[in-house]
Length: 196
Image (cartoon, rainbow, N blue to C red; front, top):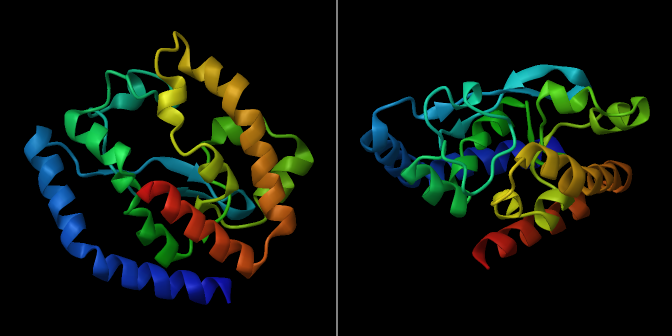
């Protein structure tokens, strides 16, 4: 049921949002002429690595200029990128990952290997037992991570101390209590949060 839901919704989502996706592609290309997509490696279900699709919101080679935690005032974010991040438009290409079966609409947000390696054995087993998602309880709780990290002299340390512990708790809560009706509830709450 969940996989059928993911396939149908991601397919129609890509069709419905195609004009918006084309407009964003044009914005990025006009902005600095660099690549449209950011395709960073993420750890998926059962520990398999995949490339996540996101619209590029930072300067080219940003990963070589700083850490993986990004605050709203990070100088690596482009002018167009700030707009895309504000309205979560940079996340739309992940519909491709959902359609391919690498991600789901609802599930723990996919992490880089560095953060997965920090998990305890049981945490790792539980979180990686499901497909990572575009949204989950942690995404709703922390819908504007960049603003929390803004102004921090060490965004990575702030993330590890203030965000990551609660994020893991909420990811485990989802995995252990997941049901299709819960997924629907999370999707609607996410949409409400974005619109609000």
